[in-house]
Amino acid sequence: MMFDSLVGPAPWPRRVATAALFLVPALALVVQSGYSFGAALLLIGALCSIHRWPRGTHNPWTWALAVVLLGMGVLWYVLADPQEAWGRWDRPAKFFLGTACLLFVSRAAPRPRAQFWGLLAGCLGAGAVALWQVHVEGAPRASGFPSRHTNAIQWGNIALLMGTMLAMQTIALRRQLGRGRVLAAALAVLMALNASVLSQSRGGWLALAMALPVGLYLLWRFHRRDLWRVLGGLAAVLAVLAAANHDLLDQRWALMEKEVQIYSSSREADNSVGQRLEHWRFAWEAGLERPLLGWGMRGYLDEKARRVAAGQYEPSILEYIYTHNEPLDMFVKAGLVGVLWLLLLYAVPLAMFWPTRARMAAYARQPEGVQAQMLALRLGGVCIPVLYAGFGMTQVFFAHNSGIMFYLFMTMLTWAALRGMDAEHADHGPSSRSPR
Picture (tube, helix red, strand yellow):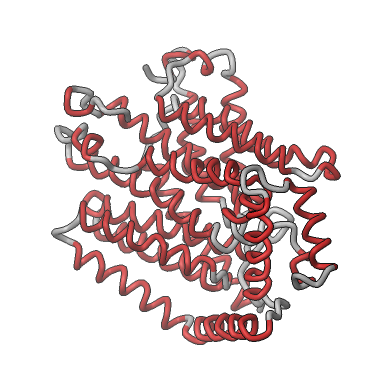
């Protein structure tokens, strides 16, 4: 049963969801808190139909994601510093309200191609902003519109994620798009990756390296006949990117090597890499003392200050309340329970989107264009948790407004588009009885 049938004949839920599917990536990095416009649209839709969608029938994966989001909201409330007063509700509220938006949009069936065009516009916009800031304004690094919500690291990593999603969707849809649109998409991917480089966020390099085996496997599985052509196109994009930023890439790599050597020889932590390594050392050693439930935020801050005062760790780690590593941050503050819930936040979306044989077989009788669109959504959806897991190795991404909002709403909107395609096109016969 489609969501539209629950609210009457007017197709407004689908229009709202389709607009949000376009707006979240299109505006994410080109205006301040751009990802919030589409999210606000979904929240308005959820509130306007609150008498309907909670009673609807939802897919088991939708409920699984809803439970994980609610659990993360509770966890972030527990981990909030009591001294923040009402501020301690900031992160939990995003997860709680996001759950309501998920239950609304998962029944609204947005038109799937809107995401491709939103990614295309967003990648071109991010690339243009980065070029303007660095080469016209003379900024040291691209950072979009800095505020308490976004900085260069989050901005650059989201640009990398959008570029990767667009690349995977373009590969899946290349026969339906035609040469001109494929070339436009390739330019947009190049612009997004260049924006990431100009942000000087080195954590994105690690995330991309971690995601590469997954991407190569999926390309081999679904595009084996055209694998070398696809890899050649991707290599050309990366070659242009490296040539255009050769000096910057060399400088950032050399600086990283120097900072690692300094920390290894003298434990000096007054630089980006050293500060992270020292923070990781503290988080691991302190976490092992309370491995099940961790220290909590207040206990973590107090214990860190005590150990620094005793000379056990470098004072530079007092500058930040997060450890620059998502799993370690959860481990020291919430123990193995927190780490498990964080892993579920990655694993559930990955399992939702993964293109299993049963899911592919459900579309076997559909036209090639429908199969390609379904695959494009699944490949794009896989990119979100895989790259976020990589970003989390050097940054507590979910501590930031941009990190939470982009993950929640890109995940739920991609899922909603996929659910709409399932309802309209999938063969629910014996070949597709496994949970979808």
